[in-house]
Length: 296
Length: 296
Image 1 (cartoon, rainbow over the protein chains, first blue to last red):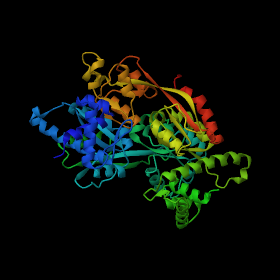
Image 2: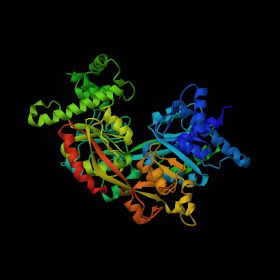
Image 3: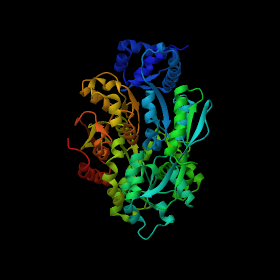
Image 4: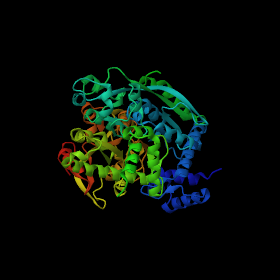
């Protein structure tokens, strides 16, 4: 078996963002922590920590960390039956990759009570689906919420529903660019908002309107920034309906084409043997996510 | 001089997120674009593009792209005096690194009109200050908005003001963890929200209250997600005041310690010879940012 004293030292340094705090949390000296990390690196045969402020895990370090998280989850299950095994009484941590728009809208509402009741802390990483699933495959995260259905080996995927996006712009933007009425053919020459180079939602929307060519766009890698940019009239963009109920009612944003949404499915990818807590979270999401997502 | 036909091909492939669209935009065949990229790589002596979907620039590719952006800005200045030089009539692009909370709050309001009037498209990258300034130094961005004052060589920094953060939690969170009244000493054992491993704002806040030890926390790398998590009662966290006026008024969020904010300064880093448009944007920010930021 692995030496979990060494792995716990690594986890503490990363979670506490430093050797000093890690030493405090584990009740050890800083040099003891350093020793353990060095020993771990000698065994692994390569660095597990990037020595920066704060220290971050290397790629192999991240895999070790996720392993620690998974072992802790399994320990947690066992501990319910054998409470005396508990050494620290610390809440569990779960590392989850998810898309930016879910995190910016319905995610917190869906998991809030669950985390509080289960004393669960979340390490969230925002990734598009390809990177999120790559992290699953590399064992860096316990679960991944994304638009792709196909699970990685050893994991399952579950359709939670879809997020509905609407193509929106500010009235000032519409007046500036479409003073004589909306024309689909001019859309590629008015600035759009695109989340980042991997975001093809606007491309797909334009393709559905018969526009295949490139188009002018800002890049704005922030869900709330994207909305603020739309409100400020910088461009048109596809925004989650969940995020703009109030803006649509008040008329601060308008649909560029009435009632022409795009639905994007969301799948929950989770390890088949991820322990009881991950299983409970999966069941919880399967029932609660429906409040915010549309059926597909 | 460089061969700008080659550099334009690189810029088009990255900006249009593919060879096909790049070819359309430049009115060339796909194989002509491929040829130009290969020739560029032969001259540079290393790859400039990562062949993925969509293709992304390598590190040297990003530097070349930023050079292209800067040359375009300079051309734009000249073009006002010699309009016939204009070949494409395309809007300019400016790549800017900025902090997530600015992008989520005041940034769009401050630059909206300016971008529309100047036909300026923004490529924004969200980075913490160390990475943002590293990108400045590497010539990957034209400007950087961050908390650090010290400019990189060849650039200037300008204090725009400060963002005010307040330590907030939901009433349900306060009831759950501080049913018998707030106690500073228990704060490290109630879950906090931390943006990411480089975010030390919560650490600084706790240190100012005399708490030096590590503390329980979720990691939530999204400004709006951070706010949603706070509202859902998952933890307490420092949130920009700009983002929570409505929540504070309605009582959906409360300050954990009355009127104990932290002000974080924001500096605008820009190249000294960045062209007229970057100069105008700098002047514009110097006067408008005050509407949202507090004086320091």
